[in-house]
Amino acid sequence: MKIALLQYPIEWADPQTNIGLLDERLHAIAGQADIAVVPEMFSTGFCTDRPGLAEEWGKGLCYQALQQMADTYNLAIVGSMMVTDQGHLYNRGFIFRPHDVPQYYDKHHLYKSGGEAEFFTPGNARPLFEYRGVKIRLAVCYDLRFPVWLRQDKHNMYDILIVVACWPTIRIQYWDALLPARAAENHAYAIGVNMVGTDGMQLDYNGHSVAYDTWLKDVAGFEDYEQGTRIVDLSIEKLRHFREVLPQWEEADEYELAHTPTNA
Image (cartoon, rainbow, N blue to C red; front, top):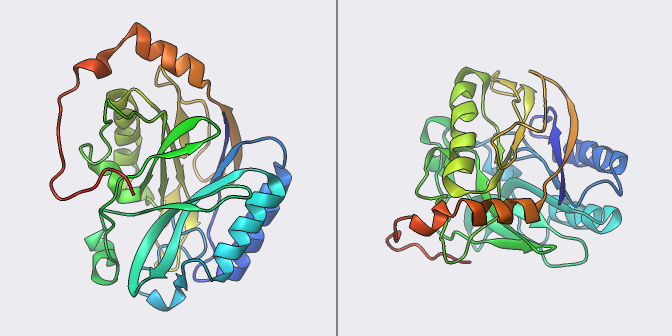
């Protein structure tokens, strides 16, 4: 499974420009990847106090553009954006697949300190997505801090955890620590994609986008503040063999999250 990590600045509150920039980046890697991962709220930046920028799910400019890009470049696009759906505002993680219906996950843990909880509705489903035979779990930024939420269900395991984020430099040490921890405890590949640059609130982002293999080796290799794309080739066969050799997942504790469906 070839996955492209796209680390770049997001133009503040400017969906049209951000769609154009993403199209340019995807055009540059056409035919080279199965999945492209972009930062959280790719079309606006973390504009949590501007709900007017949200588009209605299934009808908006970004929705149409993402589906067209997935079809054109024959890859899945993973990220998040602000949407409205049945009267609620969500930070919606998405997987747009070529010539197929988009799948989504609504961010569960809303970042109160950033104003997100004031306007947004938390999602309560923990879906697994399957794409080209690979099971994927999607998380959005602050979700990364909550290991129980991302814990494997040993009866229905995921292969890759993808985390999309707007995670500022001032707290990047937690990002650096938490993502490999989630990979290790869940016996899964882990990919995190963060933005770089300065946003409209003057918060600084230095990136640290990363992909961890089965031995917790960083196979992406971004520098601080680097704008660019890295494509990693993750062997699902190797991961599953690793799980057979070290079947620690079989000994995981059974658990249940109250009032939370495990699948959308």
